[in-house]
Amino acid sequence: EAGVAQSPRYKIIEKRQSVAFWCNPISGHATLYWYQQILGQGPKLLIQFQNNGVVDDSQLPKDRFSAERLKGVDSTLKIQPAKLEDSAVYLCASSLDRTASSPLHFGNGTRLTVT
Amino acid sequence: GEDVEQSLFLSVREGDSSVINCTYTDSSSTYLYWYKQEPGAGLQLLTYIFSNMDMKQDQRLTVLLNKKDKHLSLRIADTQTGDSAIYFCAGSGGSQGNLIFGKGTKLSVKP
Image 1 (cartoon, rainbow over the protein chains, first blue to last red):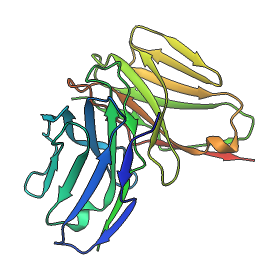
Image 2 (image 1 turned 30 degrees about the horizontal axis):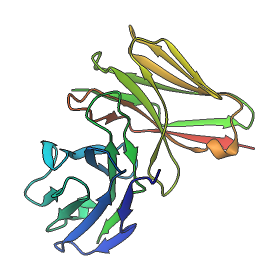
Image 3 (image 1 turned 90 degrees about the vertical axis):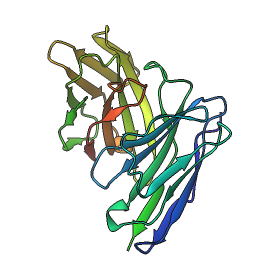
């Protein structure tokens, strides 16, 4: 079974620039998550999709972050404009469904550095 | 909301057992998870335990759950250098199935 794919692996941008990350979840997984992991901390949920609908985006800074999952499969996360504090690893995860018994499977993440 | 606490560092000698501890606040977490993160990689699911269980064993891994004290531990028997990584405890405290993570425990294994 192929895992969760993310690209790019690394990205360096200057503050105020924009950036986009891409995620392809495990085939058949209805639920997709974007997490932000700042150095030295645990991952923090940004947004959760069920198929192509948003379930939870309460922690997403909507003035600069946006995400979509148009066809219920791949997803993109965008930051515009970026700030220095957005430097982090952005992790995509997927699960079969939203039940607590359905483990999350993570991709390797995109490491963003904002200078 | 859910809050998950872990000690930040643990150092053991190769061959010894490692015990990583975690406390959580939300008693409604139906599942509790342990993930492993190696440098530059995503999180790898190690094991998980249902909240009505006290213990789960999976090869070298033993998970103990004390629901009364909201305490979870992960024991790694015969720890190897390849076990060096950051270990995250997570609770399914989110109502929509998402996970709430602790800050992670960095395990260093000395030869």
